[in-house]
Image (cartoon, rainbow, N blue to C red; front, side, top):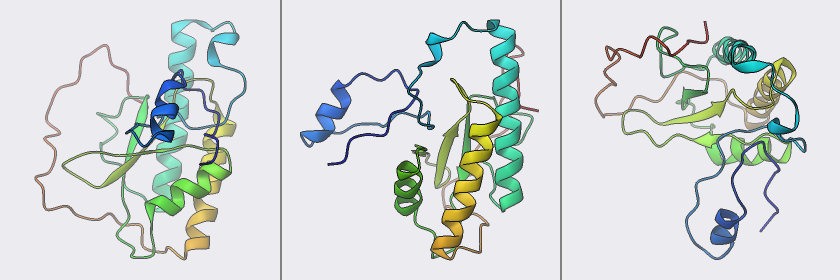
Length: 176
């Protein structure tokens, strides 16, 4: 089994050992390779981090939509933590291929486990900035081209659609 890609996740080594022994494991949700953990740099405060996360989210959402992807949540409900993306309907699209190729290039994304839509997720937090957001977008674009994917409209699940009328707490900032 290949060595896991370093990430900014604070996950301990025990889940990797469980995975190596055949146990189940949920991989880290934060994706770019980083050998410098986010806690090694003095933070610019909560407001500074929040602003960076919101900018990361905006770059990611705008870039994914420009590629043709559809995000699960509308902007008004999207928090700047992790973005859920609907799986494309193109039969040439294969999530495992996207995941493996991104991982080899230093980016780790997370498969969505929703009952309302087939999806995957990309994190916006941690020691990430504009360069990492644009980097993952460029790599996704390249990999889609390698796979021959042209139709990025989402698969439509037979499950009920999410109730997007839920009110988010007023303290939760959006990525807009």
